[in-house]
Image (cartoon, rainbow, N blue to C red; front, side, top):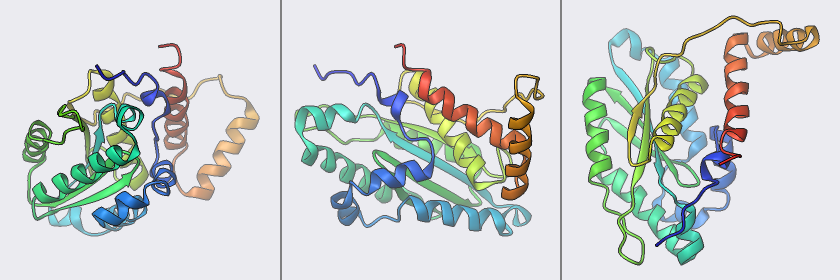
Length: 237
């Protein structure tokens, strides 16, 4: 029986930048697939969000597709076997994506899909569920692999590129914790006000950073807290 990876969720990349760093180690996979990479995913998504898709009534959805327990493939069968799984996965996603969707290799063992068009969000969810169920990539010993998918919808879940990606990544994380081989949608987040848990110096620096980046303080706090929780929430398991 393949050994279970108990550290992946604790150490899994959170941002596109994290995945890009992993991509530098995956040139063989990139060269074989020739898919656009994580930086292009972010660039294309930002351009779409800054465009007129909302006014035109187009549906914009992103999906992050994460290979389940991928580390054991490299550990048990070697990196060439791991590369083959990634290549087969990328080809599967590209071959089965609808015409209004574009597939990217975000990095590591994660892929991204941008849907833009007249497809309804519910139909995209059903499509992704079928994509997950029909995923037929195997390891050298013939064991069928699985993927976990998180999706987020532009202008509903978020309107900023980084926030939308964070929402989709959060959906992946919830689905992973829920048992893997699942698909999850971004969910509404209940907000609470800042409290006296922050020092005056921290709040002043936060205010300056928000003004410099042109984004809200609450967004920065949510991003920082997500990074902190991701680092520690699996440490004791």
